[in-house]
Length: 562
Image (cartoon, rainbow, N blue to C red; front, side):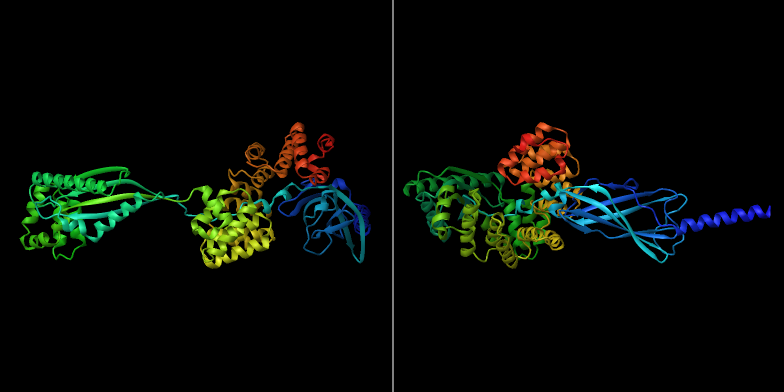
């Protein structure tokens, strides 16, 4: 019995020494799976997770292995962070792989994307330390190629935010003058027709009638009686004042030979309690709160008058200061000032912009789809109205659309210096930072543009560039742009992506290329071929991209590219 136990112990020791002493065998590609495979660009990175399943009786107990993911492409290679795991006899903090049972490890890998990576191999480099010995094992290829669809996100196609103009072609002005009456009278005194207000109103009406750029829309008369006295008397008195004022105005229009004046309307108010309450509230009468309380307590006009007359200590003051102001007719002239036509504004914007107001010249920029023309208009605007942030912002937006990002950034900086709280230049400056890869600064600037309609698209682009495709799709919402469709493709919302691409007003080469990608992903070869052919027709450089693009690896592209 003792001899048998000794034999078992010796055999176990021999096996243990054997598993520790022998060199680690070569790793097989079958031990590894990669997600995703092929690799895929996310933002501007190529991330992946390499899952290793180490079989039993393979990993020696005293071995420590450092795995380095290597992406090999175009005669060069780039490495990701190394990852270490170890056997059971190694003193260390790395994950342990059992000799008897094997084990699983998960190896993260990430590479900064380069265009040449489309044709590439993801290989694993193995460096082994076993006691005092160090050696390397042959590399293993675990994935092939990189899908680079995410790189179609394009800052240059983003729409900058233009600051709105306040141009109004038709501006309505209302001018008023009052004719005051004596108590219980409705005749118009000559002195009332010579007041400054009445003389100015008459001159404005005459000037408007003789100016082709002005239109008299309406002349209105509103006549009032003060709320002292009986309701029947006041109603008759207010009506007489309305009639007298209307007759005067018609006669005056005839004398001034004014025949085009829109409508002449008139109304009267028998007892102007509303005006009475307003004047009392604005006055310095000592007991005005008591008077206002009476007005709120009683709604019947005659009872109101009785209660106020009962306030004998203040009624005399009311009769002297307040009530005379309520015996009047108010004449209101509604006159439209008609500005220049679109044609006139554009003609001046391109020939003599100095004759345009800031609102007109900003409006002129909205009348053309030609960015070169828009750029010239906003350059003139910034020169003429250099203290208005909108001119610099819109100049920068046109420069951005023209691809002059340095000039655009300078213009946006100028706009922000004039109005630090303005949302448009902050968002636009964020786009410039996004184009330069300064994502943190871009996000900070976008934060200052909260509430701006265009911000959602800018944020969507930011999320695309930083690899959060789901957030990008949410930010774009129902936007109709290439970038929005790209976010939907990357989140596999293919139905919405197709709707978005079909709704783009001015489709370009990228629009058709994305539609071809959509065709490939939905196994619609005709859709792929038709749209890829159109994309290459608009941009011949896309032919080379398509030949390398793993999106199309399962299709024959000869019909589209030949």
